[in-house]
Image 1 (spheres, rainbow, N blue to C red):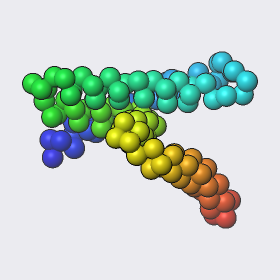
Image 2 (image 1 turned 135 degrees about the vertical axis):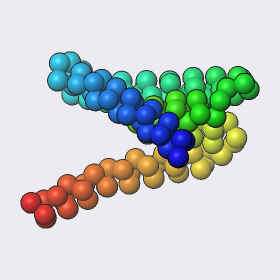
Image 3 (image 1 turned 90 degrees about the horizontal axis):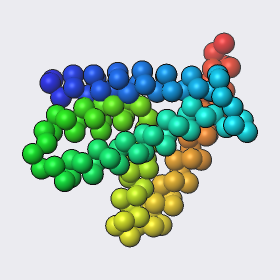
Length: 125
């Protein structure tokens, strides 16, 4: 139960941070790219890399801190950070084909899922 509360608190912080950063879309445009989301995804990848590296090299760190920062904050901030980290791990382990397949599946099915969600919402409304 304590683990769930720690993840939930981190997720709350990450989600609120994502919302605030994504508001940049309303004030700053760059060639129609959603700048807020782009910043969230890149920053989230940077953060998960930092936290993963920090906890690997800091053996005295608490498992609760890992859950709070990596699963909670980064997970709430963006799942793109986990996606990037997992792909880097696959590449480092020599699973290049698996990484490419994972990327392709994630992007294609992610877009298809958005389209399906839009279609379902139109059917309901």
